[in-house]
Amino acid sequence: MLAVIIRLLLSQLTVLALCTLSAAQTREQSNPCPVVSVQTPAGIIEPGARVKFTAAISGGDSQGLRYAWSISKGKIVGGQGTNSINMVYSGYPRMTATVIVSGLPAECKNTASEVYEFIIDPGPIKLGEIAGSGYTIDKRLLSNIERETRENPNAQLYVALQFEVGTSDNFMRRIRTRIANQLKKTRIDKNRITFVMADKGDKSVRFWLIPPGADNPAI
Image (cartoon, rainbow, N blue to C red; front, side, top):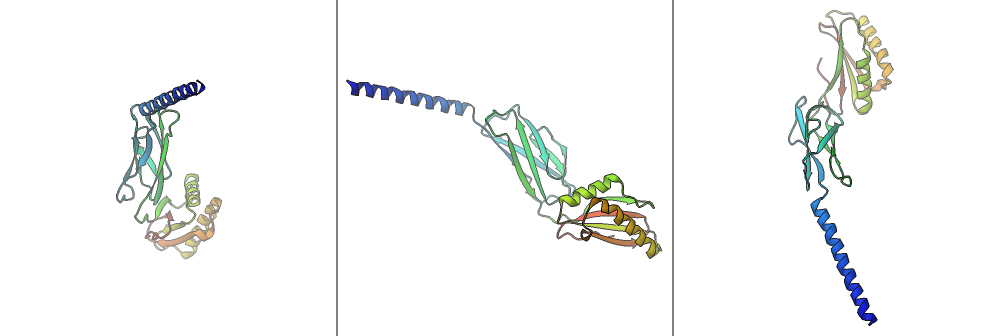
């Protein structure tokens, strides 16, 4: 008699376990967690061209979702809040695009990132310039120079000074010293700065970031 009762209990427990498993599978099938991924552009992208990144949602319903994008380099110029953004390539060979998707079930992963590396020589990157006889670097440009050189520790800062034809060597050296003293505020190692001077007609100073392997700009 005891054996019969035990068999009945085991049978009922088995049926209950199967029902519970079936219900869980039904819930999982009715509301699965979609997989969020970021698709990167294909092919070669030229400097200044627009680059497109797209968020892909697979295995679930993508209706009513919201998208928040961020990128490590460059500038987003369209598509923020949608599943696809356009950004302008800033000249750096590597960037990361990250999307956060709102509207997914709370237990689902809602973010994804993808790294895109350009397979072209980025060349020199112009940080800015000053013109006229003052030869004074404004705070905004100085801050930009400091930030970019700090974020790219293997790059060189290339400073091209232009003067009117016939300018004396003594005057050009004085201006070079003036610019160097202003750059000291950025705390850039002087060994990372290259100065070139030429008297080709205009009064200007141009600042370039030179990534490893890139050629210096012509002046």
